[in-house]
Image (cartoon, rainbow, N blue to C red; front, side, top):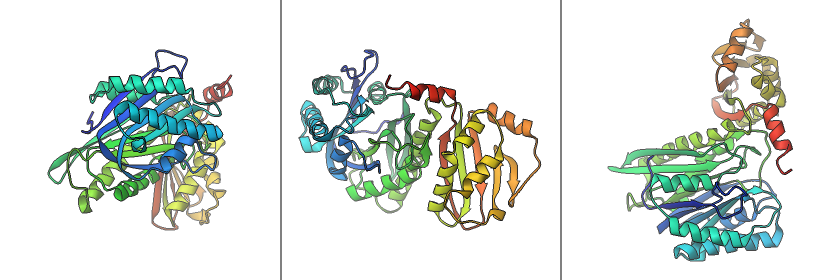
Length: 395
């Protein structure tokens, strides 16, 4: 991995999760400080850690991010906010930082108070285990997981201004995934130097094309948070101009790689579905159509069964609330033309079905003739395993 300079990591088990073999508390530390930016859930019911971080980002000097898994600290009232502040204070004290140099994230079951004695133990334990190598990074990446089947990580390296700049990210999420954002946490780190305003702008842009373009069942969460931390350890002067644009492009690619791992892990999902919309008037129109198709239970179940039922896909575009000429709609599934200029096209159903069943990724391309806009959106299929898992989640 291309781990950025200027960061330390640790993950530990402090007892929030029942399984002692699973980390449930992580620290990401910038000993010399980092610029920080954040994007968050747009759910009106949001968790205490979201409120805590929103108030503090963008920022110029963040030293520590503390993350617990197994408990969302959501819908916990005034005590939840007090616990979030205490979690930040404990993490900061453990690494020798000021309380206002901390950010916190939580994920897990909603409506349960944080066990603060365990949080305190987690902060203390992690502070003693901090490292800057891949082993430490992976331990921290495991500490943020809940129902995930495994870690979700990505990294990049590029040359800007004659210097190598690195990016690395970790995220979690598998269920309760709906755009703006999903039940997911993410931390992206870079050793580039960024001004706080620029960090916020490039993260927001990257999130619009990645974390805001995924869905499993369309259920928006209470805790969604993605943080960007820039240590500046690779260069002293903040990026600007073409270098900033190149960095934003790399950040967007990394965020897409991270984000698509979430629906691909969709709690029993057997297919990752990529929906590409082309030819709408605006990007918002494209997003709305893609999201509508992605959230259709009939589309999801068809893909789960390998059924090229194009009528479900085409009809879903029609109730998305976007005006378009139905005679201009086309559909290509896994490279096979099924529908063109508003009319069906003859195709071999068995061949298309086999292309769905034989591949983890199913690609749906919907074309319109309303304008120049386009978008890519990712979701998962819907099958018995997903229903079984979520029927028994808390019992």
